Image (cartoon, rainbow, N blue to C red; front, side):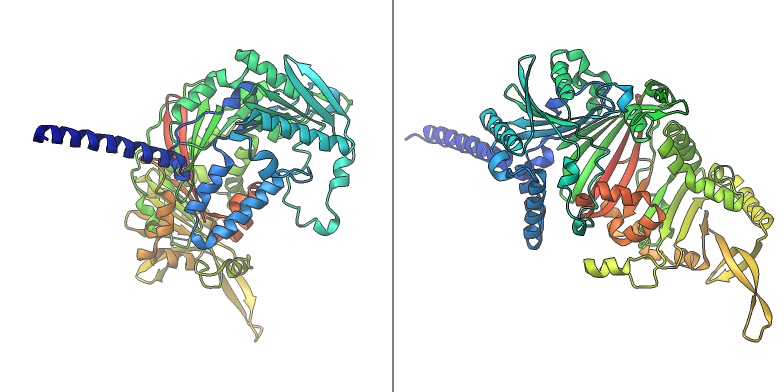
Length: 614
C-alpha cells in the first residue's frame, strides 16, 4: 500500500471515530440528568389553555424522573437514601386518598411539563355566591393511551366511592365531571390526634373544589379543573388564539428577556393577583344594605406600576437560581443601569454571623424608588413602611428625611443575633434548633453609611439634636481605640442600701470610622462592628458562595442566612412563618437566600434570586 493511500485511510478512520465518539458523547450528555443545567429556555406549551388575564401560572418544564435523577447525582452519597425517601413521600402525597400509585398509574405516561394556573378570580361571575377562583392543571403526556387508562381508572374509583359522574362533549373533547358533596372533605379530615401533623396544609378556602373535571386534549395534555366551566374555557382558549396567554404581548416580552436555561416558569398578572390576595378580588363583601359590593381590578391596575412578573427557575449545582422580569404597565420607566461590580466595602463592618443584611449604594434613590414602586400594592407597601412608621412613632424620627436623604454612597444594614450561646454552624440539626430558640435578649442592628457628602456631618449632628429632644443624653466614651457617641436615658434605681442611683440605658451608639458612620443599637454591637477585621461578612465564605451566582453589575445584595438565623428572623419578621409554611419542603433544605437587582432596561426590571440548598 502506498503511503498516501495509507494516510488517507487513516484520516478517514480517525474522522469516523471522532464523529462516532462525538455522537456517543452527545447521546450520553443528553441522557445525563446534568443536562438539566443547560437544557435551554423552554416555554410552557400549556399556556394555550390559560387566558391572557389569568392571575398566575406556574409550570414545571422537566420530567419528574429526570429531576429526581439530577437530585441524586448532586446529593452527597451519605444523604442519597434520605433524598430518595423524601421524593417517595412526595410522590405518594400527589395521589393521597385516591387508591392510585404514582409508579404504576402515572409514571408510564407523564411527560415533560406540569402546569397549574389560577385562571380567574371568579369563574361564574355570580355576585350572589361571592368570587369562585378557577384552577386548571395541565399535565403533558407521552403515552396518550396510558393516560386515558389512568383517567378511566381514576373515575372508576370515584364512582365506586359514590360520586355521580357527568359526561359531556365540548368542541370535540370529552369532559368527565363529578361534584364534590358538601361535608365530604370534613369527613375525610384526619382525626384530632393527627392535627399537628397536618397543620402545614394550605387552607381549603384558598383552593375551593366545588367539583372536579378532567379531559384529554389531543395526544398532548391531560387536563383537570375545579369546575367544568373552567375546563370549557380552557378548551375555548385553544381555538380562540387571541384569548390565550401564549399570544399575550407582555408574556412574549417577558420570555424574550429571560434567556437563561430553566426548568420552571412562573408568570403573574400583578394587578389581578394582588387584588385577589388582598381580598379586594378574592371575595365580595356585603355592605350595610345587604347589597354586594363590587370590586374594581381595573382601578387597582391603574394605581400599580407593574403589570406582569415572570420568574424563570433554573438549576445550579448548589441550589436553585431564579431570574425575574418585571414589566411596567406603560413601558415608559426610565432605564436604570447598576454600577456595582463587587460587594460594597461597608460590609466589612458587619460580623460574619449576621443572618440578614442589606447592602448597596445611593440609599436615598433606592428608598424613593421602592416607595414609588410599591405604592399601589397595599400589603407590600405596609410591609415596607412598617419599620419606618415604628421608628417615627417611638422616636419622632423621619428616617427618609433624617437618614436616607444623605446616604448617597455605600450603605449596609445587618441584623446581629444576641444569643448567649456559641455559634451554631458546626452543630447538628437538633442541637442547632435547640440553640436557636429565641431568648429574652433583644437582637441588635448595625447600620453603616458612607459619609460621601458634606451634608453627612450636619445630618449626624441633627440626629444628636433629635435625641436630646427625646430626653436622651448625648455623650462620648472610649471603646477600645475608638471614641463613640452614645444616646442614653438616665433612670433612677435603688440599691440594697436604699440609696438612689442613676442607671444609664443605652438607646443607640454611633461612631465615625474613616469615611463611614456606624450606627448600632448597643455598645456591644458597636464593639463587634469595630472588631470584625477578617471575620466580617464581606470575607465570609457562606456569604460569597450565596452571591456568586448573581450577575454583575448590580444594585447590591439582600442576604438571608437561613441556617444561622431562622429563629430570630421569624421573630423579627413574622411573615416568614407564613412563607415557610407555604414552601416547607424547600425550607427543609434551604441554607441561604440572596437577591440582587440588575436595573431597568426598556421598561423591564431584572433581578436574580439564588437559593442555596443543602
